[in-house]
Length: 75
Image 1 (tube, rainbow, N blue to C red):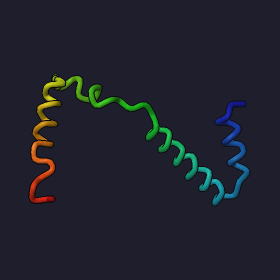
Image 2 (cartoon, rainbow, N blue to C red):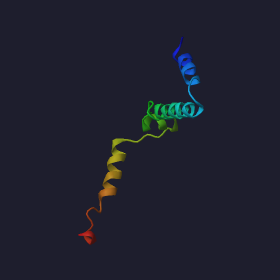
Image 3 (cartoon, rainbow, N blue to C red):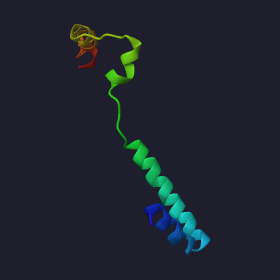
Image 4 (cartoon, rainbow, N blue to C red):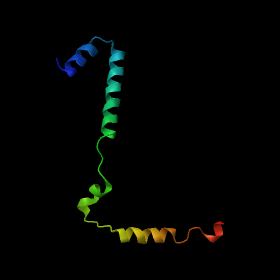
């Protein structure tokens, strides 16, 4: 007997309110399992867009972002 068959048999012996609890828990586990599944990197997600970001691009953006830090009016 498979686990699914055992589960159906066991849950069938429970009162309806307990069956609902089992269903709620199974749905919770399903959502948690999907949420913790394998994730693609941002490079993998954007790979088909043809965007090429170089280390020089990153360095330029960092310089721009931090150019006015700390600002004199903030001291």
